Image (cartoon, rainbow, N blue to C red; front, side, top):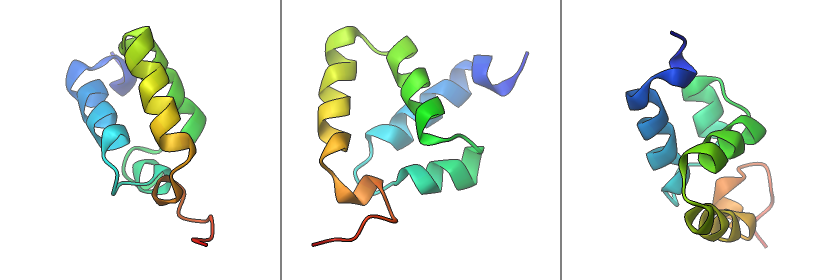
Amino acid sequence: MNKEDSASFISEVISMAWADDISFDKIKNVWGLSEGAVIKIMRSNLKPGSFKLWRKRVSGRNSKHEKKPNY
């Protein structure tokens, strides 16, 4: 079983992705997952409405992208 299949791994990634103060870069440093991989995990493990709400939240949030300038 690889780490992507572990329930505790998925739970940890989901909670980190929902947190406003944790960027995709931090998730990549901890777990080695790209933003796209995190999105795939979220899409496959959240209800459709929850996934849409999460995507709307993180799309306009500079804190989820460390390299974006904060204007």
